[in-house]
Image (tube, rainbow, N blue to C red):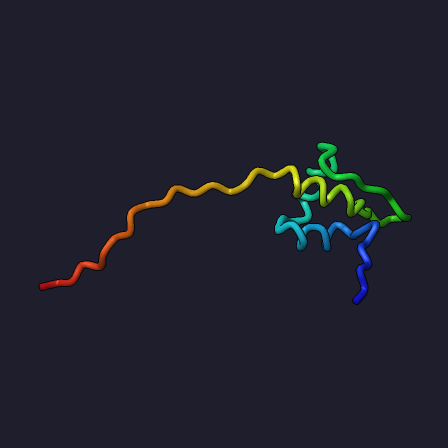
Length: 74
């Protein structure tokens, strides 16, 4: 099996990978939360910075609500 990990990724691919839109990825780059380089006209995101960003996100927390029983019309 190939354990290849990319070094650089296009913005579109990063957006798909982290579940955000392209604009959000560019905002993360502008705020230095993601690292990016230019290769000609292409903006490529450093994959290691994507992993660091994801690792820095807080865990999702949800309230548990009591289960509701179905009401029947009697």
